[in-house]
Image 1 (tube, rainbow, N blue to C red):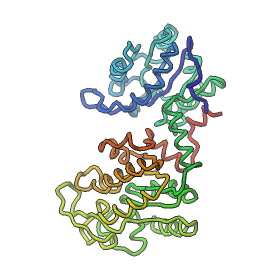
Image 2: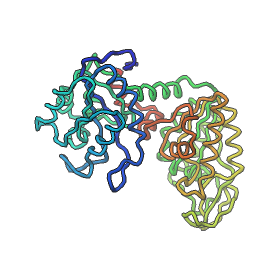
Image 3: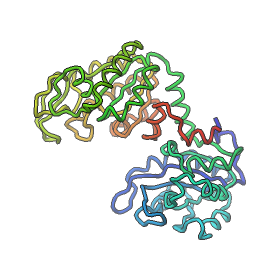
Image 4: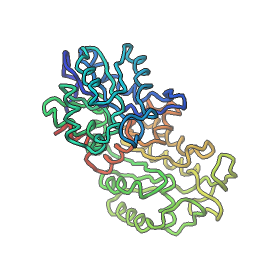
Length: 398
């Protein structure tokens, strides 16, 4: 693995790709700086070596091509100064104006420069080779620390790496992600339990299929479980269901049985008569949801059974909530799983957590630091778990 750990970057201009696509409020104030802080060990290492650091990042999804005030990285540049404790050179000018090129050329060792939103260039998302070559001329080596964008074959995340055949590296964040995912998928201590949730089977087909050959236990939670329940003849009321995926659900269960994978579907459900915190609720068997009611969370019996499976596992992969986690009334199942996984880690289990709501749950409960590994990349982690090659990883490893 091409890590920066054993490389001295003194006197070098490092072209660094990070994921600073952080949430902001209406006043352009950063409301969660996690992504910035996660790349700080890489930035601090480069600066301590005496490198000049030229940072590339994206923000939002600009559509027009060219500068758009709504998506400027200026607030990020100002915030970054408070984190790194030194000025951050920044310009809203774009490549071709001469200003960006001059700023990069004049950058001295120990200084930081943040380029304007890399997605202001239409060539970026197209993976344009000529644009990637223009980017490459700003630095003399390349470091990728943007796992959250590693599944994109964009100029700054992948294509630019080919212009640094002997000088391309993973930052610490990327290195940590790759190492943990490799362990998870190729060297996981057994028993290995996957807990897969979310609203739709269709969004998790690739993961389910790829994990059948790797896990001992498969726990299927969230709204997607009701496609399985209905396929087996259960009554699901108004619960979410993909009728066109019921044959697939039956086939997945058949294949898991053939492979000796024990699969678990929650046996009880917390149901509501409407989608809201003030809904009337009751607990019913999962296949006996009355008409007009919708399953919103795992019930207590299911949480107990899932806890027991988790506590018998040596490796856990958790991706996706147990229910409608954003509504406090229906967050108990997701929280119970988070607590169980944290407890298993105390007993030496290797637990990986990825996916927006799963990560939000462990962070909200203050349990993130008790997990073995919390992924920073939603889409990137999903594609990796599906067995896909991520362009951002391949480009550095080649």
